[in-house]
Length: 305
Image 1: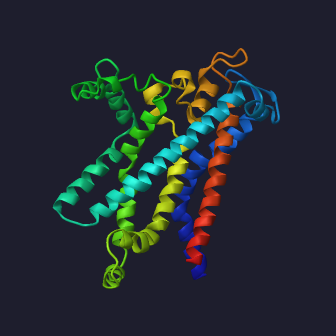
Image 2: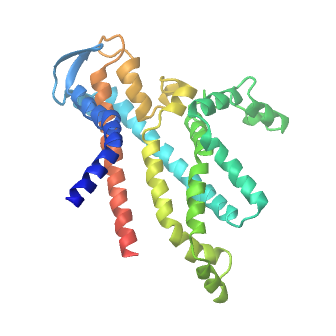
Image 3: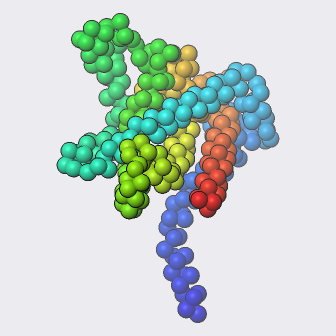
């Protein structure tokens, strides 16, 4: 009887979170799959189409070209973000772990961008990257590097990279905080023993610090992958839903939005919700499959270690 009372208490405690999760995660997921199985005329659902929308996205031009182009941009988005956070982020965490008032100040400053809204970040950087009066081009001209000035968000060669760097600047405070917590949890006796054996600098980091913070690195990597393959807000604020110049900043999130609500598809006035829903479900499959595989690999690696 006592156990049954405890179980009821647990159920009551998790019920609000379960309801919210079901309403905002599970239900939209299943409805996106359901909507992707029907034809649509505007907001009016039509006949059952089976997997026709998925075949269109994956094999029919120009939808398949734009879909795989968006996936390539998502991969580049993740790869560059990961490279920045795994080098600069981990380096800053190691530096901040040395302690001191100045390092505490720097740690606080590095985390401030993460607290800002993506809408605010995107709007401010759009102003600073303005090719006519933006502070970035003005600063380059003042430094004698006026030849480097360019329309950063209007040039297909630089638009996506510029947005990724801005995203990394805004995001880096989170991995720094996670890495710093992992570094500070390492027993000091390990470093002291290594110093007694003659280890210094890079050797301490390579053989003591890095292996012990690797679980934190892997966790942040998975979270980064999930976010970068669902990126939408920053790109939408800085480029709208157009996909940028020559679709150079198009990712799966903006492609979904434009396909479902923006572009006219097959004579519709506001896009095609069926095709958009198919893209959304394919996004879920990609993110869910890769994240699950990475989680299992990480768990197995920790068990072996």
